[in-house]
Image (cartoon, rainbow, N blue to C red; front, side, top):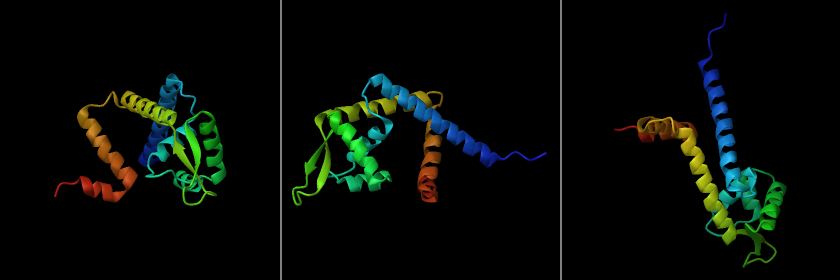
Length: 153
C-alpha cells in the first residue's frame, strides 16, 4: 500500500479550482452577452496595461503567443468594434492597436463579470479565510519573496 501523496492532492485541487474558476467566469461573461471569447477578453485586459497603443508584436510577447494568434484576435475584436488599428505617428508602416469606446465599455463589463465570478467562488469563505488565502496565493504567484513581504518584523 502506498502512502498518500499530499502534493499530488494539492496539485489536483489547484487544477480543479482553476477549471471551476474558468467555468464560472465563462458563465458570467456569457450572461453579459458581450460576444467576446476568453482569448479576446485576455487581449482587451492586456491592452489597458500600455501607456500608449502597442504593436501587435508587443501584444504577442506579453500574451506569450505567436503574432499570428494576435492578428486573429484583433481581427475579431476590430470587426466587433472593440479595437481599431491605427498607424504609428512616427512610422506609418507600424500598426498599433487601441481600444475603442465600445472596447472600454466591454472591458468594464468583463471586469464586472470577473468580480462577480470571484465573489461566487469566495462566498463560502470568511473575511479571515480570504485574507489567509490572499497571502497564500501571493506566495504561490510571486514565489518566496511574496511570503517574506507578508511577515511582520
